[in-house]
Every structure is written in C-alpha cells, then in structure tokens.
Length: 274
Ligand code: 13P
Image (spheres, protein in one colour):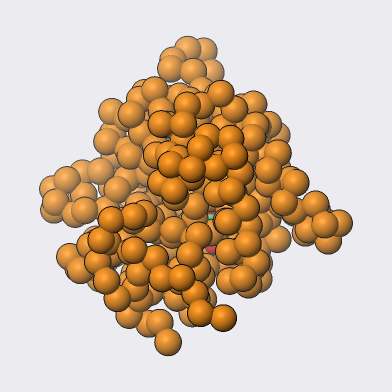
C-alpha cells in the first residue's frame, strides 16, 4: 500500500509541516568524559543537510548536562540538549531531585517525562507525569511525554485503551496551544531494550490513534502540529521504514543512541532508505 509522503519526507527538506525529532535517551549510561566523546563524535558524523531534515536531541544523565552543554555551545553544534526527567516543584526539600528550573538554566530544550521505566520502577502515575510536564512548560522547555502498553496489555487487546488513558491523564488540563507544541513518544514497553520492534504498521496505527485522540480533545490544529515519536529498539536497520510512516515524526532511541556512529545512521535514515 503506498504511504502518504510527509512534508518533511526523506528526499525533500522540511517544506512546512512537522519536523521530525530524533532523540537519544542515554538512560543511566556514559559518565561526563564519555558523554563529551560521544557528543563530539556525533557532531562529526552529522552535517548541515542532516539538521535540515531532522531535529536532533540528546538526553544524557544529569551529571553530564553541563559538560555536553559546554561542547554544544563552544562548537556551535545544532543538537538540542535534553534531560530524562525532572521534579514537578521548582525548589525545596526533595533530596536527590532536580527541578525544571535548574534544567532550563543549562539550556535544556526537551525533557522526557513519564518514561515507562519511571512509571514501572519508580511508580510514577499519570498525575505525576502531568505535574512534571507542567513544570517543564513553565520554564519554556518542551516535554516529551511517554506512553506505551505492556505485552500483557497488548495481548489482552487493551493497548489503545492503555495509551489513551496515559495520554488523557498526562495532558489533562493543558491548553490546545500548549499541546500543539508537545512531543508524545509512543514506546511499547515490550519493545524497549528487547530487540523487538513494533512493526511499522503497528507503530503507525498507535501513533495515528494518539493524534486522533489529541484531535478529539484539543482540536485538529493541535493534532496536526503535535509530534509523535516511536521508541523501542529503533536501529539503523529499522529506522527508515518506521520514519516513513505518516504519523511517526521521529524516534526516541535508547541503546542505539549510546554509540555515536549508530545514532548518526538513525538520524540520517533517509540515506539508507530502500
Ligand atoms: P531502546 O532503544 O534501547 O529499546 O530504548 C527505547 C527507550 O526506552 C528510549 O526511551
């Protein structure tokens, strides 16, 4: 079946429409020395044509942010700095936590909220994710709001309902103008770090479902501007087919983003498309 080509398709520049965002979530990997090496290698592997087609963000651990920020600024590298989480409050007695205000001071542009690892391992509810997204927005940054079902939920035919519930709870009370600028990352839990990827058709179905729900709740204009990433074992080999889907506007990459060469091949996936 022929696919609708996006305005920002693989062989044209971003002639309007949604600019894909490819984000590297380093999780709890790379100390600040390794982070500096990785970002320098990544910058070397990418060129202005790549940045014209795709926006790129990297999300190192908190301890690396200042080092990566310094390299990006010193060398004028057009990669956006991202964080993996934040606390909903601006400041206070929250030992071990980092606020959105602190991230904004480091020129962070994107903050992941509600990653499935945080939901599962740290018990984050949709309410907490909503509060975190609001904190990110208060400081002029963009939240990347993660949603996704487990394998049991998918087998039970509940995948869409689970994702809808997470989305409704995480975006609850936000204005349409705000929602239009958000990034939602659909990351099926069963595809994270497992080597199993959703088929391009399944990923497309869920990303279209997310967009339809946003159209229902916040209007068609917000839905048209919203960027929806796919995440879960994205690799250079599967990136072209996933990124070609009309409702997938980029990727949230874990393991493959730790290696600059591999991540660069995902960023310039259009060069490898069949
Ligand atoms: P992997 O790419 O390692 O499957 O991780 C995906 C992810 O969780 C990104 O946030």
